[in-house]
Length: 291
Length: 312
Ligand SMILES: Cc1ncc(C[n+]2csc(CCOP(=O)(O)OP(=O)(O)O)c2C)c(N)n1
Image (cartoon, rainbow over all chains, first blue to last red; front, side, top):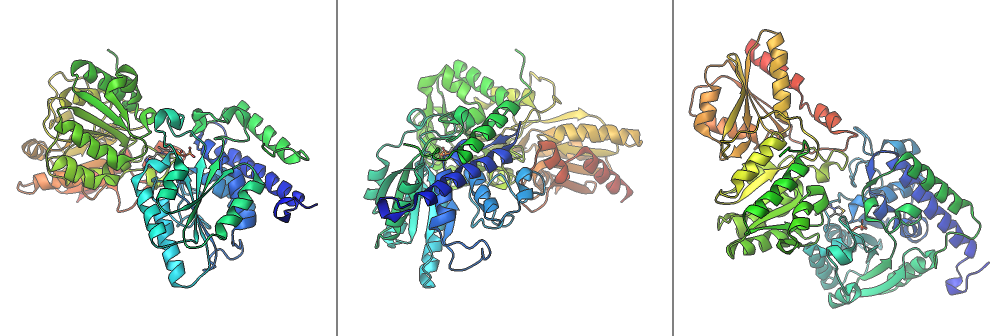
């Protein structure tokens, strides 16, 4: 079956939707019961992570040190659970590590640690630094004449960090069209809704003023995310940012759009309910596609 | 007033009390007011609270402006960001002009155990101590924190205050005559002197009890003010013993131990051992206790350090 747009196969899209739910399931299992974990900002990225790791990125799980691999940097490093989930699903991280997140001596730290976790490209977690690292990587890749792309995922709360705009200026100044920024616009930050805490209006206009191309998508629509990633790779001369409208905690009814699950603790009942909902989403034939 | 055992709650309450006492008190946050509990101040005095967004550097220099215009700003973030991320802003906007800015470094040391090395601050005392004009406070429990907060309004110049994320046992008693700079003797002893700060104060008291059982008497000194360190008092408390240990939840480079050695350098003194974090970063763990044990920040470690020095 072929999708009208770009000839994407609907069964292909359905499979990525299932993958996104599967990634969320890994995240919930990583957090477990009675322990704090960044559920919300991880789940808002599930479709984006699925689209990147399972379709758009040049990334061979059998050869993760390939110098020509595309790089994914999580500038909003607190959401690393979704990246761990993808790397588990790809077989890069052993499944046995999943229940050992944030335990002493474990491979999976609370924030991205390139020295401990295979597939993690940088150390992030102090917000606002990922795009600068991406600029450095893109400059080096260009010097070495490698075609690899650099994807940098940022939070909308994180956009308040000035360093990020310094990096944005540098990327445009150097014409780094191999960088694709992705803003996870879930409209909730640590202490509450961005509109109450620290609203940053006109995000697209700001990136444009800094010399970037911009695309706005529904971050939970696999076809829309794939199309945006395709279009970004076709734009030359300037970097592109994809502003993805998402829902924090997406896919888990009680956590959706809820600041409490920015870094919340799941009760046994919530844990069971979350897994049931996510497994149902994987089983349903045509479910899981958001409007 | 009963003081909560959690230092973050005690901090929030104390800040509200300062706000009532002095209208010049203002608070600034960088999207962590729930973690730091400065949200209590925001609720009590919404017009004197400024949510600056996740933009710590701007927050620090903005505080400098507030101070220059007559306010007493209290800044909040995790200790690692409130010290390191904004080091240059603190140095140039705040410390060089010697402004009355108070920095709350919350979730200090390893106390944000799950989040790992990017969120743990084991070098903040070294950084802040090196800044001229900056004072560095590290309370042992909520009682001492509250006592420090009462003094902090009158203090001239910038102050950096370390606040632990987890409940700490009460080890101090409310001292009406508290002053910033004081070294508080908590226990007497003739054989060894244990200087400790923060969470390590209760470990030092436990160690003294363990040493007692072995026939070794150790005095315990709570060093709540790491800078300015009362050098004369340090020399006095270190005199007459055969072993000296400094214990802190911080790198052994540049923290309490370094400050103590600097203070003792002109005076004759017994051999010194430093208990702290080696030259390395933190990591994630399932509990605070597990992490402290992993880094050897325990009563047992203090005890064996004392015994080793005495066997010397
Ligand atoms: C420099 C810095 N300041 C503060 C924090 C603490 N922190 C972690 S996540 C977060 C909120 C992030 O909000 P946003 O960027 O919108 O991410 P999302 O909503 O997608 O989780 C904050 C303040 C940090 N990690 N780094």
